[in-house]
Image (cartoon, rainbow, N blue to C red; front, side, top):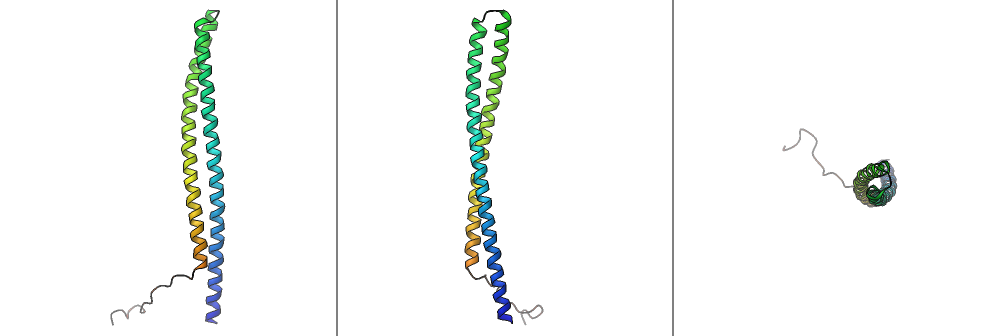
Length: 139
């Protein structure tokens, strides 16, 4: 009976570790997808910042050579807005790049934990050292 119980416990432990390994692999895949999404957002924000800088330059030119005072004033204000927005987009691109690196690191950590769980499932559990019952120590 005892050996059967130990075998069932070992099978249960192995199964639990295999399930944990698979869950960590799924976490790793999700973190990798998250990293890719953040990287794409970073690129999109950087491109938008470049486009806004082009708008700013074009508005500056219109502000210098535009026809009416209203047109020049409007172009100057629009250029200021575009310049501010470009700076914000550059910051956002940097933030998303940082988030992508963090998600990459988390994906690697989850994959490493999956490997450890998978290997533990294949090894016998570490046994605790045998200790004398309480009260009998040093006797």
